[in-house]
Length: 110
Image: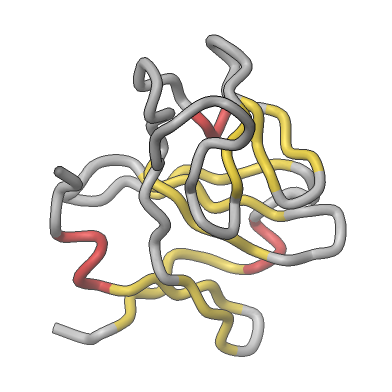
């Protein structure tokens, strides 16, 4: 198996939005910030499992649509007084394609 898996084109992810990638480990949300930076997190808020892909992207963070937890896109960590982590997935861009670390797509988070 390749160490990296192509999951789509950079242009497939809308600015200030996300795209969901289905993986054996569960859904992965790929986000694009206003500055074009891409991030990948498991698509589950650490609070109650809300779909982060449906949240509002602002700066390099996303706000969960269920209970307004703010999650750092860079680290997956909850911000402010909240505690928890959405688990970051290694991502890189190769030309115009987004690739994710294969090992992270195969292993369920604890």
